[in-house]
Length: 145
Image (cartoon, rainbow, N blue to C red; front, top):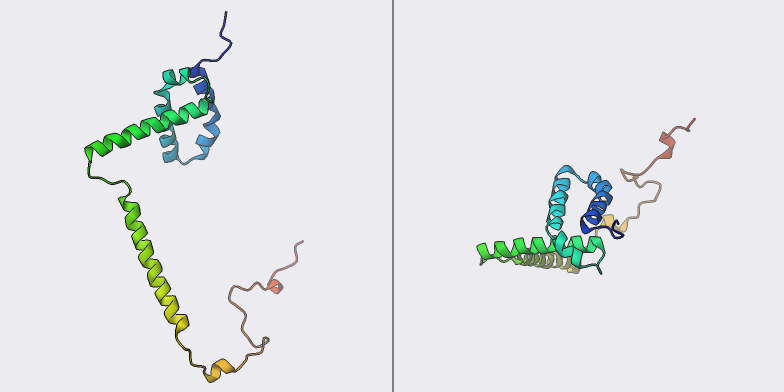
């Protein structure tokens, strides 16, 4: 008698086949990275067979996350003083400094009293004003055949 339920390996192969169109749409270097992630998910097929209450793709994603987390932890052991979030804090500090400079510049420009000149008081009629450089002029286009 045959099995009525597909094995976890067969299910994994079906999921991998379903990802082929997505994989082909990726750039070549991203395709290689996706293949590496799929290999990571294969490392836990035996454990995934016990989790029959989960969807197959969920099991594979959890297996990939587990392997990536193990790699992160091993790197943290090698570099104990490395802070993975330090770069984000530095970027946030730079962003805050930029926003403060931007606010100071805007307030200096708009809060300073402006002198009215004679040129500001003269209105230019709309027919004399020049057209913007990127304005479309439909007179240049020919009628389509």
